[in-house]
Image (cartoon, rainbow, N blue to C red; front, top):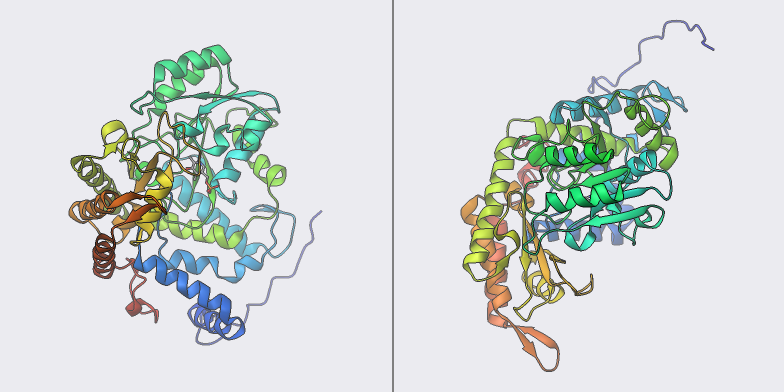
Length: 472
Ligand SMILES: *Cc1c(COP(=O)(O)O)cnc(C)c1O
């Protein structure tokens, strides 16, 4: 039922802030209030900001958000309860929220050439769970890349509900680390999955989404493309796009989109075809996010996604994406030249996988040694790895944050040299297992400090602190 209302009176605005409250003043006031009200927590947060500025972040699953993205997360949108979708909420007070969410979805469609975008998933994992629960009934078969070959937990690992409540089958990479489309087709035809999943967490090479769709069609399966790691390369055309090949595409927003924690669901040419539920595929997926797997969306995070997507659409991003791809190639080349084994022999993305088996090192020892020098990477299984997930026989290295700091090929190669220097300086030790040569540690620490000072996190520098700095 609708209610006819009198026309609203114009709202009074504070004279000096034509668009509402002064957010710059608010942010400064909010941080000062935190420091005053909760010194221990403030100190931790300040320490973390310093740590990020002073270390070389080379975790492939991470990036660094522009301060304008972080600013969105700290606004009063976070106070809003807004179950439902724009124009169809279950709460009042959503006039602004609706506009923010529509803006985020429009930007996502524009950046990826998608027809529909669902911007509410709290994470990439939540996005995948929504898609899987929407398209499959419990017990149905899904086929994804095995976890130890670079797949993600939510692609059917037994450690995830996707491997517990569904009949999850896995395909594997070849011994040298490449996807084997012949094997994927054979498995798809043998198992007849309802859903074929492509995309990975630890795969450095191009994924042939068109080939995956051919296989999915032949096996009569839906195709989910998870581009969490390569979304920035896809957005800029440096990696082929799955949007019109896959029935559904998902991504996290904090990796290569340089955004907040969160996820996106994107649909291309199949968006409006009938879904397995009521209405179109897009309508089915929207219901799968809310109310099936999530409650109220995080509107502050959706605003931050909108901001990150505008950053991705902006003038500097194509250059950043090129720099991160070139940086990863330089890292792969330099590590190989230093005698280390690079899985697949190189990379087409931001990611380099290093196989440490045969060096006497495990992934966890290497990770610790590097961290003690200010280089942050993560241990990772490599194809054929039989070591436990906490140990691993490899490392995964990424160039997203190096590129955002403005580092080009040469600096990325210098970072790779530092990695190799550290790995070469770790020796077995009777008492403690392994030791890192103190002289090497001191030299690498100094080199890291110098690089971090020369290439500060973009727009995080003090001159931007008072709000007069320009966005990068
Ligand atoms: C990181 C990742 C996810 C999960 O994203 P979260 O936002 O961390 O939940 C899903 N799929 C792939 C391939 C990923 O690499």
